[in-house]
Image 1 (tube, rainbow, N blue to C red):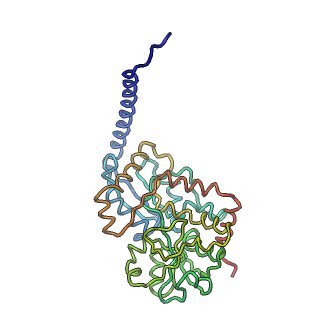
Image 2 (image 1 turned 90 degrees about the horizontal axis):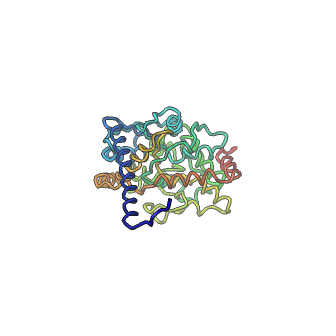
Image 3 (image 1 turned 120 degrees about the vertical axis):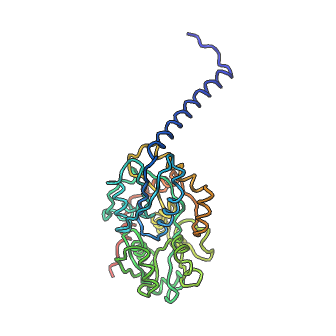
Length: 352
């Protein structure tokens, strides 16, 4: 059968019909999502302790995001910090409800555990099956020493020992070992601390002399007096890009790489900084609920009441999208095996 010529009005009518169908589908999806979440409680399960940088973000967002999720569920925060957050990540993958009522927030380094530790990893999750939602900020990370320490600058780390605390294999313990083995920084690690808060207390009490890794968010919120009163020396910041809030005179760790291989190892090790404070769903959550919660995070970041609350708490918000997070993970997991093996070897405690 011969078809007649298309007219502008016919094309427009067809387009409006398709748009109407799409809009109708979107409305139906949102209506179903609203019906599901109405009257429910969404749990933010955080893999760090109360008062940590991640916990600060989780509680701040939980206070505002409920009104942006269709159905306006109640949102609460729970903490599961065991093993530096690895227990929480494994629990999210293997045991958390897969209906969209449980949202995880993990430490920035936990998704990298399998490639950082190789066969020594105790991860029980498959990274590509977790559903990434959003991150409120990258993870600006610094090394610090207490003002009474002989280590005042990063250069002093090459000459003088700095006693730091360790949590889990992918946290401050791992950082100290990698940098001691790779760059010769004279870190001595005392292991067994439950979390950053306990390490900070040990630093203040003189039990430790500093931290090989400390989140800038945590420092600027929990320990603003340390910065204001000069109680700490900021030795360097990690990550390939300098963070705008950290003073300009703080050097980048990348500046101390002497070879291309050293730089590549540091970029792999600290690629996690770019994902910051990753919120995620366990596998198999229905896509329409994933989409709705992702939009709710975006709406929360733009919410004037949220912005005002963040400013009052001196919390920076530079959101990282789920696409950006996924790109970072993809790059890391596609890195050459020999580079990953080298990093895993460097993560081991020194023989001495």
